[in-house]
Length: 243
Image (cartoon, rainbow, N blue to C red; front, side, top):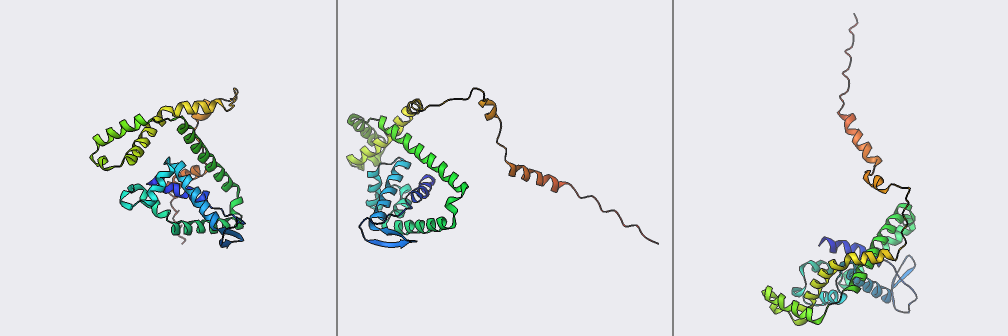
């Protein structure tokens, strides 16, 4: 569930944009930016694509989970199911646009630290989606594998007997993809590295550098504080009685 909750934050940060002049009805304007029915629906579709790629769930299965009766939906997907209801999604989307507009006006979006965080998140997201796509392009699942896997699944789990052929194949396909992903992962990484020029600096001792722990100025201050606090204050000198 934690992974799915995190993905919601990612999803709404990605789709927080509005188009204008697309010829469809304008829902409202936020700081002059028109939110149209087309831009909202495009954002919804982008959110589905984002969820599919970041959680490695086929888009058709996500749509199925959103449209099927609740008793057929995996427990871990129920929260997302509610978030993707049209009214709820629009409320979240609108709020994100409003907050982003306020952040842009205040200069928050232009701060150097925020830009660095966004740059790092973009790098993570692109890397993860790219490697996932490359892995999936290497995975081939035959009809024979699906049939054998479905037969094994039904024999192993009694509840699987009630699954339709399509549902059984979907479950087996996900299982096989997971197993084959582990097998091809390293070879895909190696292939990616082959296409990128990496030049090491022979004069730099990387091993020595990595053996040294990071130093955090703030943590040093924090460590010094208890020591000084623990040092007892000198006893006050008794006042000399004057006669």
